[in-house]
Image (cartoon, rainbow, N blue to C red; front, top):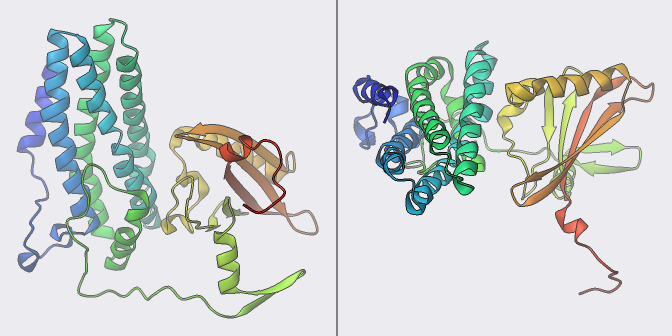
Length: 343
C-alpha cells in the first residue's frame, strides 16, 4: 500500500476527533448525544473508516499480490458497499449546507460538494473496472487508492472543519429539523443510535390552515390542495423569479430526494457545482423568452426518468418562475394494447 495511504491513516488515527459517548445522562455537548445529526454523521464515519481499513485496504493488498478472480470480486464487493456513501454525502449537501448558506457560509457547498462528486465518480469507475476486469492491474490500484485516500481525507475535513463550523452556527431547532428529515435520504452503513430529543424543542407540529383558496376553476382548502399535489403521479418543484425554491410536492415515492431545507434556497445551490452552469443557462433562456420549455430523459437506477421544465409566465407574459416536472415513464413505455374494463 502506498506511503500516502499510511500517512493518512496515521493522521486520522492520532488526530483529535469529536468523541461519541453512549451515556446520554453524562453528556454536555449536543454532538455527543445519540441521535443528534453530528453524532450520527460521526457514527457513519467510524463505520466507513472501518470498512476502508479492514476490507478495502486488505483486499487491495491481496489484489496487488494476485489479481485472481476471487480478489477482483472481493474488491468489487467493497466498492459496491461503499456506494452507500452517497446517503452520507447527500444528507450533508441537502440538509446541512443550506443552513450554513443561511449564515453566509458557502465554502463547504462550493468545495466539499465538488470533492464528494469526485469520490462518487471514483467509486463508480472502480466498480466498472473491476466488473469488466481486463488485466490492467495498475489502473484498478490507482482508482482504489484514490478512493481510500479521498474518503479518509473527507472524514478529516468533516470532523475538523465542517461539523465544528456547523455546531457553532446552527440553532437547536435547525438541528431538530435536520434530524427529522434525515430519514428521507437514509444513512450509510449504520444509523442513528437513538431518537434525539433535546430538552427544549421549539418546533410546532405541522399545521395546515383550513382556509380556502378561490381559483378560476374551483375552490379548494389548503389541506385539499396539498393532498391533491402529493397524490399526483409526478414530482413537482417550483422555483420563483429569483431562482429560489418555493415549493415541492411530497408524494409517497419521490424519484429524487428533496428535503424541506431546500425551501428558500437558490436552485443553483441545490445542484452539484459541475452542473450549475446547465441550470443557469436554462433559467436564462426562460427569463429572456428564448425558450418556454426544455425536456430531458435519463436512466436512473431501475427507472427511466422524464424531466420537463416549463417557464411560468403571468397573463402579461412576465416570467414568474420555473416549474420542474419529473416522472418515471418506464411503466408507461411498457403499456401495450388496450384496457377498457376494470380489473
